[in-house]
Image 1 (cartoon, rainbow, N blue to C red):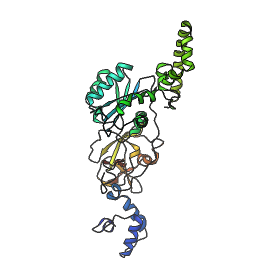
Image 2: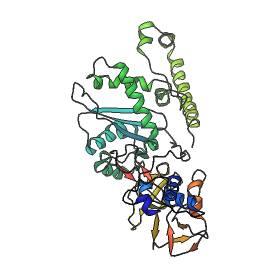
Image 3: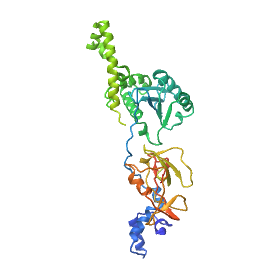
Image 4: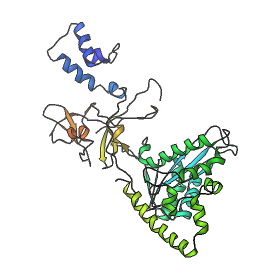
Length: 384
C-alpha cells in the first residue's frame, strides 16, 4: 500500500482508487478497500495537503460591556491607496462596546507610540480610563501600548490569530466607515478631510444592535442636524419658545430618558503558493477555553505562544510512536490524552473520542486538529 500510494510514482490517490490500483498489480485480500481507506486517512502528506474544510462554527460568545466606555475595541484600516492629499494612509478606529460610539483618526504612518497617544487623547482624556481594551495581535498594539495599559490598569485582550470575529464590533465599524467614506469623497484623495463627517454620520445613525443612535446614548438627546437649522424644524421652534424653568425640567427628563435608553441598549447585547500545504502539524491541544480558543503544543513539547480558534482546526490521524501521555483504544487506534480540555456542545464531534477512557499502549496515533490560514500563506495544523 505504501509503495503504490506514496512510492516513486505514487500519486497519493484516495482509498478506493488505491485499492483498485493494487488489484491491477495482482494483489487482493478481503479487507483491502477498508485498509486502503484507513491507510490514506493516516498519510501525513495527504493530511497537510488536504482540501480546506469549513467546520461548523464554534458557539458564539458575545462580548458585553457593563456600562458606557468600559470596554473599547480598537483596530486599523490600511494601508489605504491612494494616499490622502495630506499623505495619510491609515485610519485608527476605536468603538465603545456599550453605546457603539466611534472614535477615529487618520495617520501617514502608524506605530505603537501613535496608537498609545490615540488611546490617551481620544479615549482616556475624553471618556475616562476603560476597564478593558480589545485588539488584534499586530505589532502596533504592543510595546508602547503595553506600557500604557499597565500604567492605567487596563485589561488588554488580544484576539486569536486570523480570527477578526473576536473583535467583531470594531470590524463592523470599519466596514461602515469605509462605506460612508466611499459615498462622501469627491476625489480619491480627500478621504481624510471627510473622515470627521463620516464619524458624525455614523454617530447619529440608528444602530440595530442597541435600538438607538450612539449620540443619544452618550448625550441623552439626538444631535441637531443641519437640515433642522436650514428648514426650521419643530424641535428648534419649541426650544426657542420654552420658558427657562420648563427648559430645565426638560433637561432633567432627558437625563432620565438617557438612563432608560442605556438600559434598553444593554438588553440588546447578549451574553500562500499553489504547491504549499494547506495544513501543518499535527499538534496537541493542551488547553481549551470555554470561548473556543485552543492552546497548542507540538510533538516535541514546544508550546504555542498564542491561541487558535477551534474553527480553524481539524482532526489529524497521523501515526506517532513513543509519545508519552497517550493511550491505545481496544480497537487498536490510539488516542492521545487532552490536557485541560472539557467537552462542550459545539466541540463534541471533535473532542469526545479523544476524551474517552482508553488503555495504555506502546503505539498510538494522535488525534489532530489542523489549522489553515485563509490566505494560505501561514499554514498551521493543530492536533489533539
